[in-house]
Image (cartoon, rainbow, N blue to C red):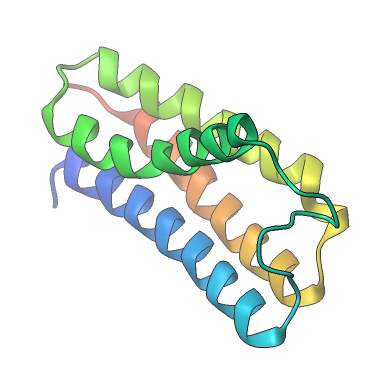
Length: 121
């Protein structure tokens, strides 16, 4: 069996790639206008917030492999719950392909929570 750290890191990579796939599909589908989000022009503070938000799964890959137990166990649980709730709250505003990808990413979040919860050092 693989080390729990590797499994959890793999879930974060899967979440990150699922988000990236959604972004690529939105570009190819023509579902966005460059420089706008929902018809408005974001401020630099909004772009910074988005960057921080989207950096979480990337940072979690590294932290899951390096941070000591039990701190990383709780970080995985808390942040996966955050992403699950965040994506669930925004689900209605997306097209079918985006909804599908968000549901898949929420599945990865649920598996992250489950594996981290069951993790015993």
